[in-house]
Length: 299
Image (cartoon, rainbow, N blue to C red; front, side, top):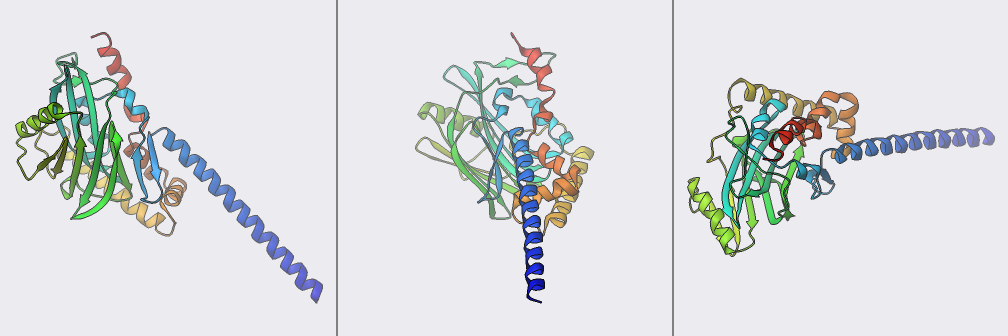
């Protein structure tokens, strides 16, 4: 009987090794696929915080900014409050914009810094917008995303586009608040920005100045929102996002961290996984930019 026990033990060990090795290889494949996707989104994964945040060298830097990007967000499943703050400084037109809301499968927030030659580049065909090209500006920034008085995301670093999202969480934009901090180059730039804030009807209590840093409490937009906000488009986008978040929580509830949950979702619900990708502003969502860039080239 001793040899039988040894044989059974050997077979069980062999089976365990095969299963373990297969699981490791599968996990490595999932991680490789995960990292490949991140390369195309311009985002990085913070395993400790279980959030995704924008890379400093993100490809979006080359795409600049214009108002049309905000108009295109709701049809792409992103329902976000937009606060563009425009001012002039150093012979340039500047835009610092703050966003918060639901990015497909994720709840998130952003601060973006853009500049253009004085008066900017106005888009053709009578579009009421300024095009800001590839940005070179970086400022120390910090952002806290708050939902129902609980901080759900926090980022703090010099950046040109400080953005972060929490996957699988559903929020309506009005449920969210952002505490943002921006440190400017000097007092003149600070005063130009604060002047733009006051023109938008921000009042003491909604912002505070310490040195060359402005702290802003952004709860509701003071600026007109994109024409695509509200109505059927927004309602359907939010309903779809909420349903996908529920599906994410149900399907991936037993998995480990965010990476494992997304790998699970990728296998079982590819349409939900695609919503996650698009919520990170995947390059597919910028397809129209090439046409826009051609339109303004040389203007």
